[in-house]
Structure formats: structure tokens, C-alpha cells
Length: 451
Ligand code: AMP
Image 1 (cartoon, rainbow, N blue to C red):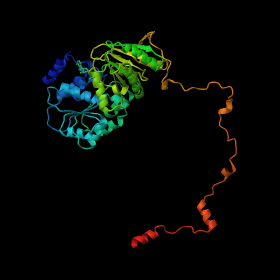
Image 2 (tube, helix red, strand yellow; image 1 turned 90 degrees about the horizontal axis):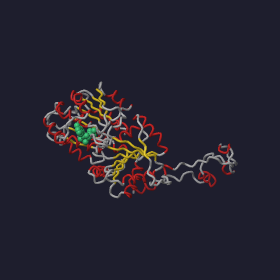
Image 3 (cartoon, rainbow, N blue to C red; image 1 turned 90 degrees about the vertical axis):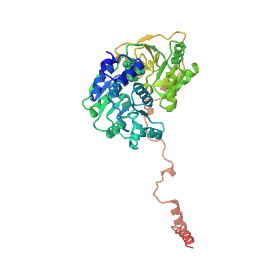
Image 4 (cartoon, helix red, strand yellow; image 1 turned 180 degrees about the vertical axis):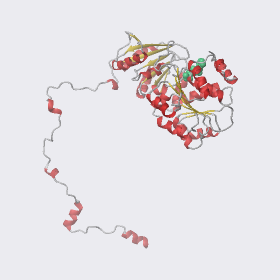
């Protein structure tokens, strides 16, 4: 099958030609007619499968030229990075089409975005929070939205955007086409579909959890953080093989900690992104990595979801994710667009259960490699690895010692007095026969004023 079979139009064919795309990916081939038909659609496809064009090709084909100011297509994505990326993809595809595309996201000046909205637009790409703020401020009118795309729905719900999505549904016209894409089908996603979609057509090109065939997966058993760093030092020293490496960690603190170590070992070759970094810092890091200025990018799971970076040679799972689906998302960053990629998983003793869950989901075993002998096995532990020291045996302690009993001494005499109310001042007043009040404090002041 080629794009010719999809019955597109000349501007789109020309743009695809410029991009060098000849054949539609499976999700594009399957989605085209369904999305074009105007029915509600739910697509299950991982990033890297070409899903952005799976919904954008039919939408752009049917979007007529218009001078009206209000947007007609709304694309919601979970992160700011994705807004930038999707806008970029749409612009590439719209090279020969006269349409207006705008991306809006939080964390930046809303007034600049208000001005941009006021210029008029056809396609709006947004994160839910900022979209809602703009709609509430009435600068943005959503009454002409005909197509709503929600991309990366599973991430959207993971990040707690359900409530915001519902608020948005409330202010959108009822007659619209809903198009939803998710990398995995979770219970949350399923619930959202049942609640808000009208008999959607489901398109799924890979069972969620199927590893992409062009990724070679390997793993190491490594005792602790510092040994993992030592092993990385050894692997990453080979700059030609490890030419563009995404390194995943579970949380922000670990990202910063690993970044500091790698920066020491490989100065000016590493960048980092996580949600505590500023928007500009994050965009700059991704750009530096994408342009090849830096070959190592340390990131948390949420930040890297949906990021489309070409030619990632390796994905390194610095820790073993608790949720096997996260592993699938991580390794999906390499081996994209038919290229070969490699994934490496590092697991400590404690992480073996998670590793088994991943293998169970994939229904395959990941080949295990031995740490080279010359790599130093560190004994040093980081805070999270140190067990709280538990007292196992103490012969001087009797079994009943821990049971709390009554206090072992009586209260001192002065503490036994019961407070019967009444203040010290009143008691003194009684004793020295002083008047109960000193009169109206403000009386003199009032007199002064009158004068
Ligand atoms: P996505 O899954 O939408 O993030 O897309 C992954 C990458 O595949 C993007 O860089 C697209 O530009 C690229 N891509 C999309 N469609 C095709 C196609 N038909 N042939 C080759 N590459 C494509």
C-alpha cells in the first residue's frame, strides 16, 4: 500500500514527498477512512508508530479553507513538549496548505497566547489546563470545534487530567467528532470512552505490551546505584556505539543525582529533563539532544512520553520500572521508523520482581549479560538503598517491655490541683478590694475629640 491508495490531495502528497514518506504506517493505513468518515475513533498505538499523521492526514484532507477566527480542530496533549512537537508535525504536513496552527501551554505568558488566539486560527494544539484558562477568559471561543483529538490519553489520565478533560467537554459543542489515541488501554481509558464516546470504532495495531521487533533488549544484574554508575561509565565510553542515549530514571531526585554523576564523567555531553526544570530549560535540553550537541539525556518517565527523537541508539533503564507498561514506553523511544535500536535494563536484587513482571507482559525473557570484571562493584549505598536497621535480638529486653503501661510515678502535688476557673487578677482584686473594672478606657479620648 502507498499513500496514493489513501486518496489524499495534491498539497498533502507534495508535503509527504518533501518529508520522504512513501508508505503509510499500519496505524495510518487503518485509521484514515475511519477518521475521515467523521465517526468517533479510539486508536491504540504507541508513539513512534506514526499516530500523529494517522489523525492529521484525514483531518487536513477534509479541512476546508476558511477565514473564520475560531478554531475548528482541537488537539489536546498532556505535556508542553508534545504541544511543540505536534505543532511542528502539523506544520510540516501543511507546507502547501493555507491553514493557521497554534500551540498553547501553561508555564508561559498567557497574554502573548491571548494575542495569538485573537489573530484567528484553524487548528489549536493545547495542554488541558491552559486551554481551559483561555476559554474561561473568553478570548478563545470553542463553539466552532468540529473535531476533538485527545492524544496520549493514558498519560493524560495518569497525570490526573480527568477532571480538566470533563470541564473541557462541557464547553465544547456537542456535535463534534472525538478522536482519541492512547498507547495502552487501561481501565481509566476504557471508562472515559464509555462515558463520553458514542459507539467509537476501535483501531489497534499492536497488542499493548508488545515490544517493537527492531529493538534488541539486554539486561544486567547490578547491586546498587554506584555500581550502576560504574557500569554506565564503561558502556558510555564507547561514543560511536552509544551515540544518542536516553537514560530513564523513576523520579526527579534520581534524575538530578545521575545527571551530576554523568556530568562529572562525561562533561558537556549530558542533559536532563524532569518536571521541576523550567520550560525553557526542558525545551533547550531536548533540542540539544535532538541536534546531537549532547549525546546523553537523563529523563523521568512522564517527561519522555511521546517525545519523538530520531535515531536514539540506546535506551538505558537505569532502574527497573514498577509498572511494566512504563518499560514498554521507555524502550519504544528507540528502534523507531524501522531503524534498529537497543535497550538495556539495570536491576538490583530488589528490582527483580518488577523485571519478572516486564518479562511476563512481553512473554519473553530479556537476555542477561555479566558485568565486566574490571567494572568496580561499589559497596557504597545511597540513602534510599540503606535499610532502616532493625533490632533483631536483644537479650536484655523482656518480651513485655514494649507494652505501654501506666505512668510509674504519681503527679507532683502542685500538678494535682484542679483548675476551678477564675483568674489571678480577679482573686487579687477581691483581696485588695479593687474596683472590678477601670472604667471606659476610651472615655477620655472621646472627650478630647469633642474639644
Ligand atoms: P509519531 O508516532 O506520530 O510520534 O511519529 C513517529 C515518527 O514517524 C515521526 O517522526 C514522523 O514524522 C514519522 N512518520 C510518520 N509517518 C510516517 C511514514 N508514513 N513513513 C515514515 N515515517 C513516518
